[in-house]
Image 1 (cartoon, one colour):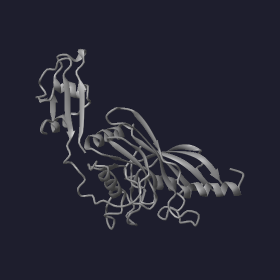
Image 2 (image 1 turned 135 degrees about the horizontal axis):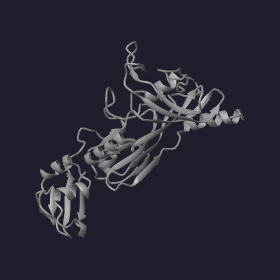
Image 3 (image 1 turned 90 degrees about the vertical axis):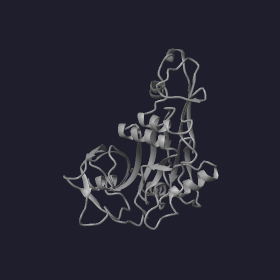
Image 4 (image 1 turned 45 degrees about the horizontal axis):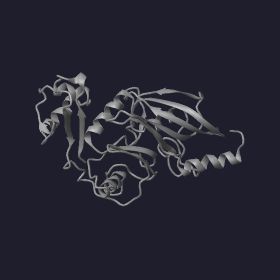
Length: 305
């Protein structure tokens, strides 16, 4: 999808170089400016293409083409399927992914993924664009997923993630309950060579940090809110199992149970700043029915929560 920025030069910006204006006023990186230079009418002042060394005058209209219409996710096939949209604007879209849906095409899943549904949705709107999903969720995990509609928005959100201003909060139902109501789990995680696809606490692994807080406790189960400072594979599942609180229904790090047909993990919310306006956004995905019904049924049968 085509993406342009424009701004009018103010009195205090009189005599400023175009390069500095693009950095300071429009917040463009050196790489973003460099890419725009080579696009047709990529950087213009008063509708005329200009070099970035030119000096600006009050009232000048600066326009930058960050992305053109030929930048599309052509490799993604369209797929039928509903989308629960939590938030959408010109640059990003946040959807509520149901459990059981794969996020990216891979293996045997090439058309029946969230990415395919997003491609279909945007094409129907006439917004065929580069689709990039930031922060994948496992097939079993439900909840908020953010995708960007252009590369610049993606790069800016990646920088927010590095700074910790773009993050997700999760809810999980655990078997057992933490000794402390809240705290940090800081244990390195590495691959478990004894079982393919499994991770483990490993002193030689990558640093991993998880914050947790107990929201509700019923019997030997707990509803836990979590936030990650790092993004290791299966981090929540491994860390909670390491303190004897495996996620309910987790076949890899706990045990399957009849009460929950999948790993009880839900991406509750996403916090980030709109990549161009800077508006702070908090987008929340409601607790899915299976997790909600579990606690409702247990509460009805147990008044001592």
